[in-house]
Image (tube, rainbow, N blue to C red):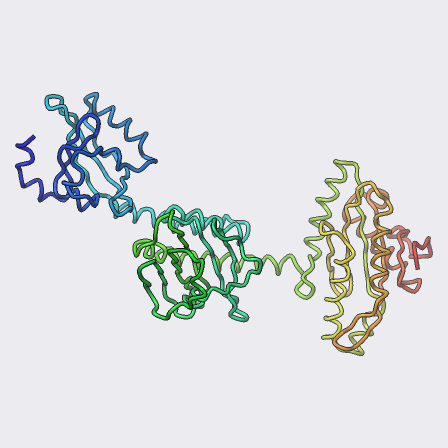
Length: 463
C-alpha cells in the first residue's frame, strides 16, 4: 500500500483515487478527495465509504460492489454522495477488485456540474410541459412545486403574485408544513414586497442577509423560518410575483447555490404562469358572459347534454327555467345602458341565490337567462325554484340610488315529459316563457304549444 501512497503524482490528478477494504473501509484517498467530497484524507481514512453514500443510492451501489468483488471491472457507474457541507456530489466511478491485496481500487470523477446542468435543462423542459398540460393555475403550481423540489429542498414553498390592477400581493399557492395556508389570500410579508419592489433576490440566513439591503421590521421576523429565500418572477411586463422557499432548520439551510438554481428557473416559471393566465382569460371569454360572469349558451348546452346523459342512465329528471325580464327595454331607454347593464348583473346575482351550487344559471344574451336544474325524481322541483325566483324579484332593485321594480316571465321544461334532447327542451321552455309574457308577465308557464302552433293560453303555475 505504501508504494501507491508514495506516488505524489496521484495527488496532482483532478479525479480522486480511493482504496477501500472489502467492507468499504477507507485505506487511502488522494488529495482530490477533499475537493470532490469536502473531507481531508485524514478525516476519512478508517471510515466506511458507504456511510457517506446518498441513502437513495445504497441498494444500487451495493449491487455494483458485489459485481466488482466477483471480479468484474466496473466502468462508468454513477451514484451520489453527501459532501461534508451537506451538498450532493455526483460521482462517475471506475473500479476494480485487487484480489492479491484484498482491496478495491477506484477512481472518482466529479460530474456534479454536468448533472446540475442536465437537471436545470430538464427542469426548464418540465416547466414548459407543465404550462401546456396543467388544467388550471392551481395544477400548474403543484407541477412547479414538484419540479423545484427536484432541484432544492422545497417542503415549504409559496407562489406570491402581484395583482396588476392594484399592485396587491396575493398567495396564489402555499404549501408549508409549519404554517397553515393564510385565511385571506393577501400577502402582507414585507420581504415579498421588497423582492417585487427591487426586482432582486433575497436570501436570509441565521447569520446574514444576502441581496437587497433594506432591513426587515422585527415584527416580520418573529416566528419565521431560519432560512428565507425569495426570487422575483420576471417577465417582459415586469416582476409579476415571487417564488418563496422557507426552511425551519431540519430540512437544511439554503445557500447561494440554491439561490442560483431558483433564479435559473424563475424566468421560465414566470413565462409558464403568464401563459396559463392568458389561457384562462381566453377560456373565460369563450365560455362566460363578460357582463354577468355567468356561463354562456355554449357552456349551458354542454352542461345540459351531460345532465341529460346522466338522467337517461339513472332514470332521473332534468328541468329548465327560461327567464326573460318584463319590459327591460324601458330601463335602457329611461336610465341608460349603463344602468341596464348594472340591472343585468344584479339579476344574475338574484338568480344564483335561488339555486344550488350544482345548478347552472346561464345568460343567453340580452335579458334572457336559463336555469338548468338536475331535479332527481321530483317533478315539482322546477316549480319550487320558479316560485323562489318570483319571490326574489318581488323586492325592488337598487341601481345606485334609483329604485326599480323588475319582474320576470318564466317558462319551464321537464325531461323527459317535454322533450328528449337539449334543443327540444330549450325550445319548449322558450315558448312557455312567451306564453307567460303574453299574459302579462311576472308568472310561470310550462305548457308550451308545439313549435308550429301559435302561442295561446294554458295552465298557469303562479301569478
